[in-house]
Length: 90
Image (cartoon, rainbow, N blue to C red; front, side, top):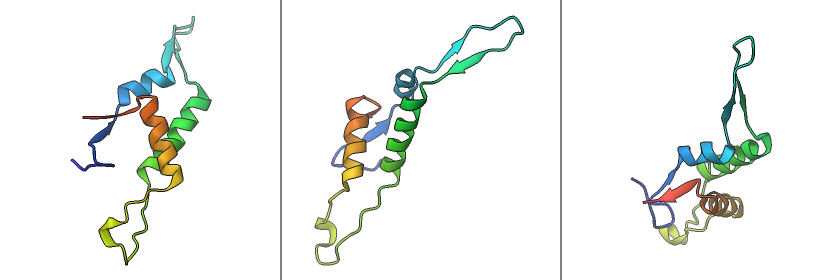
């Protein structure tokens, strides 16, 4: 397992499902069921996860491995997902 910011983190898929409130609506007369998703929450979580998973750190040749600075979008995405308990650490 790889460490992120000194800890082992994972994406809690069950918590994401609860947060997005993906629930099935009862069947109608024809037997069809519907799933409802809060589109604003869905798109925000999708965007935050994309930022989190595609972070690319440009290493400074002079600093070598000491350059561990992350971008502002990464920090915001990480902190938001951590605050909402959508990512957790072991």
